[in-house]
Length: 360
Image (cartoon, rainbow, N blue to C red; front, side):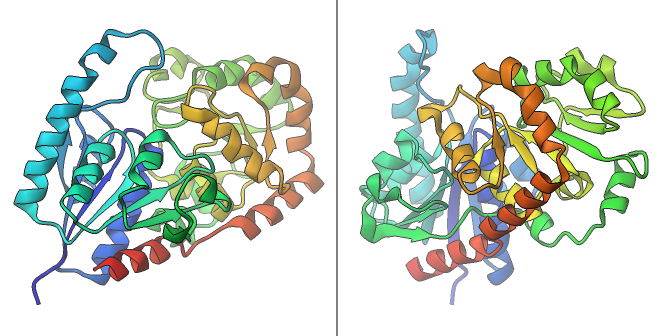
């Protein structure tokens, strides 16, 4: 029997990319002769991270429509047409048995053409409120894997499969003790660690908040691992000290969660799934700059089950002091950790690959 051939398209942000890589790793572990090709967007995170993970990738010249007036919107139709044409060439040349999309700019054109060519397709929706690309694709794809209940409001009910979000194998396999993880990041033994996550590029408002409250954290007896993002590292590296470790990006995410006692984070769907598995008490500050305000909806899905604290970005100055005090409360932290564990879906990646195998 000839080896399976699969195309996976997902990226633009780590929230779309890392689920795609988790699916690829699981599929490869089951079918070691399988040929896996990634399709991403030129200039985005996947063009760097995918080859480093050992997979081949082809880039499309595509990005999203800007919500503000922008010259980029004028050339969007040209990019879309060229990406559709390139998708046809990729699919005809590679001849995949199945095509998987995890969201991001490139997945739209590729999955659309795959549907036209009658190639079996699956999309994986990470968020509690799907973006427009997956809503449009849902009409033609064969199978939809979702992380939240209630998405029949947006997708054909008969295609839905509740799987949870894929979690990177390094996290699900991680058996690193907090002591060893803290030593890896050169943390001071015996001092609680606050981990700050603003996504791979960084979160401007969260970084401003952390810089403003460094004295507060010190008075509370905390040390920090602060992932400020590649866009902001030069601005904030001056705050580096024995108790404040500043990094543009942390690749060793399993060690980062193991080192954390409490977390302040954006609420991208992939991050939330990882936090549920790691069960680290968390204060979420959803990004207001995302389609359909889906990060806020993701965060509230956890908050409504007592698994997280949430502050809207516009309310940070007013609500942060009291909310952070609550995050430091031992009883509240234990309650959040317990509730996060009940929401974890460590077998999500396996369930999604089961669905892919069903298509094959």
